[in-house]
Image (tube, rainbow, N blue to C red; front, side):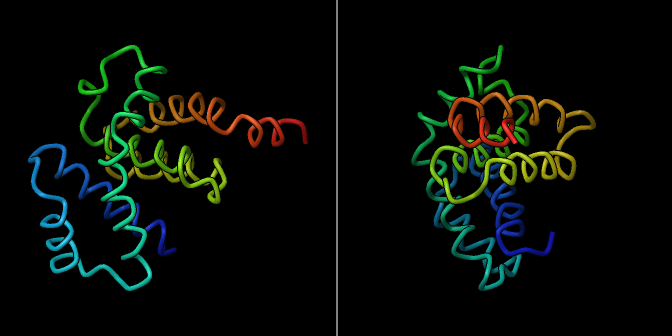
Length: 144
């Protein structure tokens, strides 16, 4: 996971997890991550994008999650919820990133940070959301 976007996502999962649990100011969390985790220049802009845009779009993101999960979004494990929120933001708003990259990154983050089987839950949910929000792209992949 040496690519700057992957590293930015990894830090963003931790930062959004912290925000979800504490409600701290996003700028304060950002400052802490930059100082304590030493984000590289290549990672910083995307980390900032994720950290500030995911909370801004939370209603839309959580609405998309709620459509495809049987439990309330707030009852999803906080680590999985942070990963899913970042991935759904990317599926909906970062169309330049192929949906398969978004899904694979979500799975890898769930394997790294989540509970033993969380990557299966994340994969299943992101696949369903990708089919809705990236329908043309996922249909094109199936047609090949």
